[in-house]
Length: 179
Image 1 (tube, helix red, strand yellow):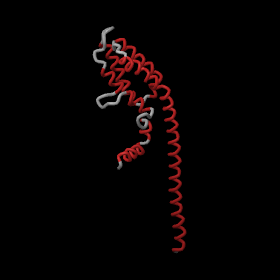
Image 2: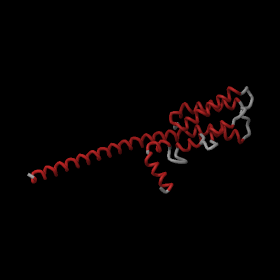
Image 3: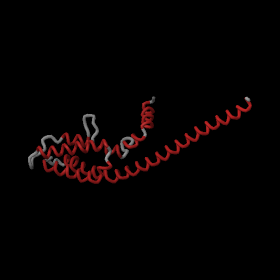
Image 4: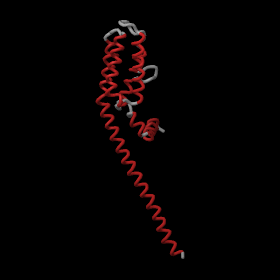
């Protein structure tokens, strides 16, 4: 009887192993296809960001950096023009903003509307520094400019990639720390 059980047991073990290998292969193929689709989506989003983010950058350079360097007064009219230019960019590019960038965008827009509402026509905005800090960061807080560059991969992995690959990112951090 043990000679009969041996082939049956061997066949049963071979069947279980075959089932496990098939399942692992199916998962790997499914994960590979999912990763491929995700990479295609990332590529399309990054392509749109590369196309649209410079328009937002241009607005900041014009209304914040150059305005400051040229010593122009930051008046109610400046705030109105700045927010109008931001809103125009948002119509086309807002869909592609990362959450971190959109959070800063929303804060900047809110501050500009407050400046418009609290400033008399022709008068200077009382405190334009919070507006500048939202754009360029400060007090240990990144500004929109940092998020723009991050989203395009200039300073670190893009936010999309970091969210999609948390294990790989954690491993990279451990390697940099020498763990």
